[in-house]
Each structure stands twice: as C-alpha cells, then as structure tokens.
Length: 219
Ligand SMILES: [Zn+2]
Image (cartoon, rainbow, N blue to C red):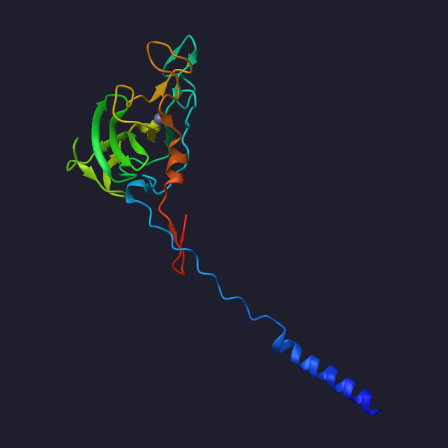
C-alpha cells in the first residue's frame, strides 16, 4: 500500500467516523403547540345521558310511534320530528347539557314531563328541549343549572320509555315546545325544521376540549 493510498483510506475512515456525528442533524426539538385559549364555558356542552343510543326516531324522522303509527299528519305529509330520541331507562338521571336556566316545564298525560333550558352562548341563545322525564323537586322554572347537573329523571312510559332531546336555535317563543313540525307549512305551523337544528351534531360540535397527557388541548 503506497502512502497516497494509505492517506486516502485514512481519509475515508475519518469520513465514516465523522459522518454519524457531524452531518446527521440532531433530532428537531418538539415544536410546542401554540397556546390555545380555553373555550368560553358558555359554549361547552355535553350529552345529557352517559350513553347516546338512538331510539326509533332521529332528527327529521317522520313523527311516528315505533310501530309506525303517525302522531300527526296533514295534507303535506307526516310531521317531522324536531329532536332525536335516545334509549333510556326509567328513573335514569338526566343531566343539563350546558350551563343555563330552566325556562319551561310542562306535564302532558301522554308524554309526561317536558323541560326547556335556555343557554346564552357566544353565538346566541339556544333552548334545549328535554321530554319524557320528571323535574326533580329542587328545580323549577327560573332555576339555574350547571353543565352536568342532574335535574330530572326519565319517566315511565312502559314499552315506549325513551328520552327526547331537541335544540332550538333561538329564544323562547310559541314554537320552542314543538316535538314535530309539518314538512310544508300547514295548520298555521312553520315548516320543519324552522329553528330546530340537529341536536347530536350540536353537542358533538360543543363538547369539552380533550386534555391530552402532555397538557395540550385538543378539540
Ligand atoms: Zn321524540
């Protein structure tokens, strides 16, 4: 081996030795997530029940009993359900979806108790409609509720027992109580959906942010 060859070989060895330490970039430091503002508590909602399993009718379903019998129809067709029905057990606690004020309580011989809760969000007022339950004795119209606070219990409707939940995108007025609206205007009622919005989609879009293990907010 000549001196030149030996020098080249040494050079190559140095390169091999040097490459791993000098030319490989150090792992990039984790870029901290930009600080995310905590959402306004007035805009945070949760499901009123711990499980959200659909019952017979969804938002916009024809308003019928599970056996298919329509509850109300007019020339333009069967009225459409303004809320969503959810599987529930008799006596199950129902929690407020958000911070708000009870603005209505009605008892119907067929549908049992109905409650309206008014929520002032940063995007405006929404009123949530809860049906087929009994308001707990410590609550009345005018009571304030906190998100997650149990304020009512599912009523016994025999084999028709379920929970009805609707979201009215507006303030209290004559149609806020409607459980269904006609597909076209009839009987002086506004057409479905009027100011009702998909209640499950609303809750999904307003769930509390998920706090990950490393402390950043997601959601
Ligand atoms: Zn319903």
